Image 1: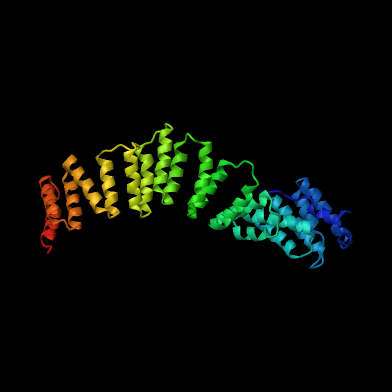
Image 2: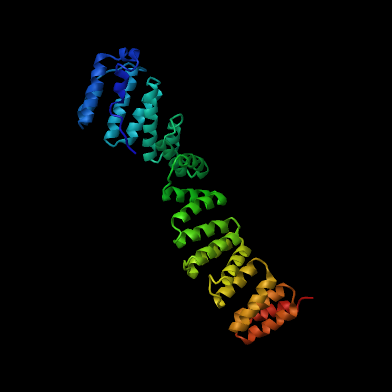
Length: 353
């Protein structure tokens, strides 16, 4: 982002600039500025520094501001960014520079501050600077660096509004930023643009379905996955697990259960003991005890596992279905379930009024 303004102070001295300002500069200072500029352009930094250090300037004068400014760009050219900020900021605060110089210096001070990850000063320097693409990019990245995506997004929207084509990186940023702020509808619209560019990539479909799932639109998420499946895109169980985990982790197990159920019904996932048990667990977490009990009953009969019978017994007892619960405990005991757990649940059920 470095762009050195090697000849900016000469503008103040040219015939096209303010004549009164030119007359206020002493000849020796004028010569020193010119010598420093020529030396700097030739890469003779020591010679440029000596020329600037040799002159004396009056306090609070244009001469002093121009020397500070020249020194600032000189040390920046040598990679001393912090020192450059100090000098250019002093020149800026002198209130002696032209409007054009102020605009140039504010932009360059913003660049320098951004390069040092001093995002708040970078934003402050950009206040009042024309909103070019470069300025908008610095503002977006500075707000992002401060963790203020709520501030970065409006600037990003302003930046992208003028673009006829938008890169994938910018689209991905808009998706991620909107999702982070729980603006799922907006994130979905940006993700659809990415999907249009990569309709054969499973990742793009999964991301769209995930956004819809986070928005609580499980039916829409399932429809997205079905569309991808119908296009011949193959899924692995692990690919779809993330969506189910997402709904479950967001304390919405009923949505995860409905999504998983839909996947099983439409053949996106294989219906086996593992997927059926997971569906039963999700219904249990969602406190849909009748449905969870029915699924565990079917599962226990299929597998004959003591743990499945024990889970069924717990669900029946939680619903106050004591006889059914005791029968399931007997089956669990016969199938080799943990005797202590069986005994504890049986004692508790038998002692209920």
